Image 1: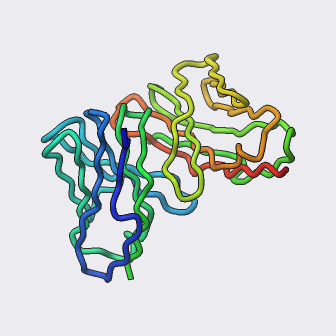
Image 2: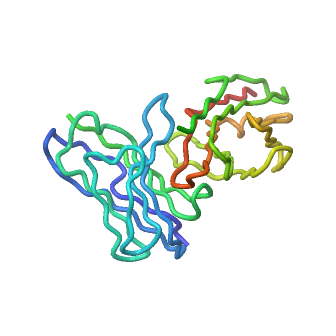
Length: 110
Length: 110
């Protein structure tokens, strides 16, 4: 099993550009999540999904969109990137609390 | 609002020097407290779940304990490979999302 995979590993965007961070899992988990990790602030939940077709907002959802068309995939879309979205993004799957995380995407917005 | 505070922010130990990391929390109706380990450049890796005061869990040189206000992660005779950032998170009564602390960066010197 590959577990949770994320692409890309690194990305640099200009302010106003859009992009999609990809996340896939092969463990047949219903619950998936997206977090951002900033220095000194721990992980903060952006969006989560409890199954295909069901998504909900977390603590910091503004500027991000998600969809869940399959159990395996949970992409995160940045609509119009801003410097405040510079961060490391982690995708997780499993049970709420006991999650498997991907290796992360380091995003820089100039 | 759920809150998690971890201390110290950083800890340097000599190999074999036992110590404890602290996770203080404020939550309405604790549904679970979780410990994760995070290596540089990687996603968090799940370690333990604790559900009620008095509960203890062990894994190799690590032991997690829980009271009504805090959790401790005890490290006995640490080795350099135990060097990592240790994250604590709580799931509150609403059970919608985890709240993470900012972590303790542990360095074990040979």
